[in-house]
Image 1 (cartoon, rainbow, N blue to C red):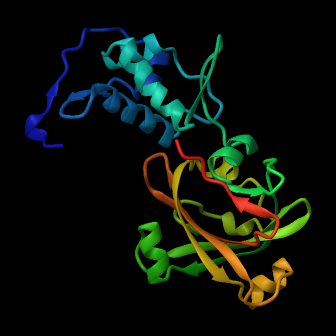
Image 2: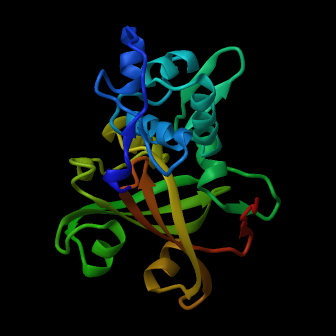
Image 3: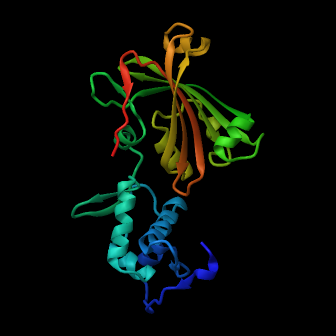
Length: 267
């Protein structure tokens, strides 16, 4: 935004409760009027609260009137911002109870991030088995995807995923070490990595981009998944981003789809 076009919204002098100060990031939080809709600016401020840890997963948010008073906007503007956060699965609205910061539980990940579905049609969260966790230096390829400098330290995780007890996915996951210090010490990582990122490192995965490609199984993938070398496979390459838009993970999943399919719901 061109700063020469900005001007402060007139705000009443409101004595904020401690809860409202936490909600808006303290007395210094300001809303600027510019070309973007006001509710989008409110949404960005609320997302900052999610990304900097002021609001933790599962926490009940202040009420819409409290947030509105802290920001000097109308409750309707706050409601519209929260509606978008809810649509993006960053907050959960519970009737009669309030609005909560979303957790990365298995049900949320199953519907938002895991797209490989058994041909029976029943969604199931896959089991995970960690093969290795190691520290390495980012190649040019890795650096480009994670937005870091080449040769920066990264964590490389290799694991397989199982559906109904059958190995069907080989995963190679690369993380910036700066975001996940010490994760390499956990040689048996939990199955639900996104919940682990959020709980242990304050990194909440908000969205991702995926690229799909047909590939042939290499020797290692064939051995781990019980298929022949060269067998056709589905490769899903994902870059996952935190709430603040920072690339947090590059994941390449090679999937055996003889009894499963990739489901994408278009809305």
